[in-house]
Image (tube, rainbow, N blue to C red; front, top):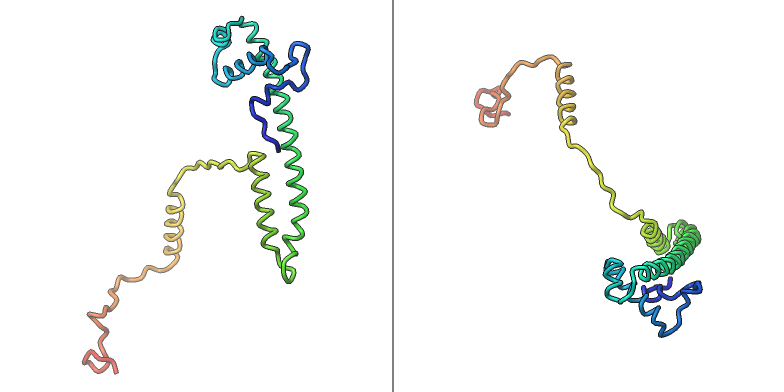
Length: 182
């Protein structure tokens, strides 16, 4: 896609009788200055004072410049549609290769990589690559639900008497009475 600079956008695409630019034309020089003023955020009154013309002249110039810019924007949209169609065609051509074009009928890793790159480019062009913001509320419902489930399970078993289990320091008595197991 060819890049268009703001200076190129000042060139008339389909000139009206009062828009026809010619090299060195003072009207086109003024419109270039008006374009710069628009980009700088200057008001019509300030641009008129800076250029020594009426506000009506600035208004007419901005209308001409906006029409020209609209044509440039339409060209960009046409290029974007064409690029998307090209990406779709490339993906369609690579798809079978990606799935079965490798050794032993295995996926071709290079083709898969190219498809991923093309899909990423398509997502960027369509604005689908923006981060998704997830908002949620953190609760402890899961913990309390789990606690309740454990309590229900424990309630199903008979209560065991509290007995102390033997520890290593306090081993079970041995059958021969000396603390050692045979």
